[in-house]
Length: 314
Image (tube, rainbow, N blue to C red; front, side, top):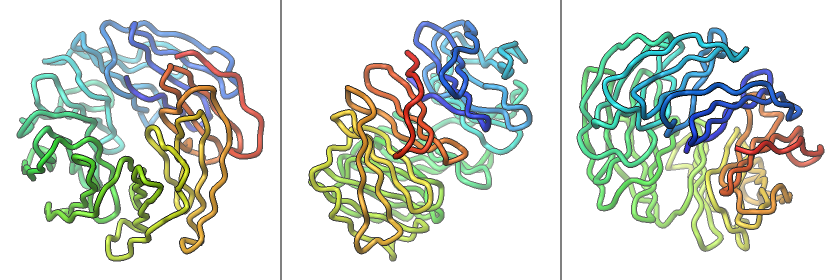
């Protein structure tokens, strides 16, 4: 299932397998539920013009749902929507269809183009500036530039995760970390189990308590970290400038301060009573969004100082 999202006002939106979009106020109070047809398989997106929620489902539908819970549009799709909706630019989104095509759609439901994906998609796409989309495959990584060009770069194992750096994507494949330049040139960086990125810099960590930070996405400036020993990252982390969040198996979240890469500081905070699946900064970066494997979601003011808001069941 997809991850929750938070708008600029701090309101939480999450989708469920039984076909609902639920919305909550920043303090945890319920706002509304909207029923959709089919199952949303990926994360929703926000329309920048009015912060309407855009989501796709297996019932061959894409919805636009206004912040007040009213329907903006419902558009039919050729095939079930297999991935989440990801902003291509201010006016459009992309998604992966079950038919192994990449689709582009306007923020108001108008079909723009579709492009065949050169392989079997196995994860969420990542959108780089200029309309370049990177799609993880079972046998490599696909680079799709709008409807103009399609390239495939082979890997020895399926690509488990892709995050973007300023100079190109980083990918996990078969327990190894790879970086790719914009033209697809690959470079290996050793074992890794998880990635976090903010579109500029990238943080990778392995299962032995080590990590590597790539400031500015520059592999020549890679910094090896040894402060992660004893931590057991369990899901998807977050990165915002020189602050990184790691979700942990014991329900804690670790904040890694990278402002002094030679001696980065780590602080831990107990958030949930089960393994954390996602730890991410909200758009304002003043709050923290945390979800668990068991389907819990919570928002915190000041990640390592303020009290938690009530949890909302996903």
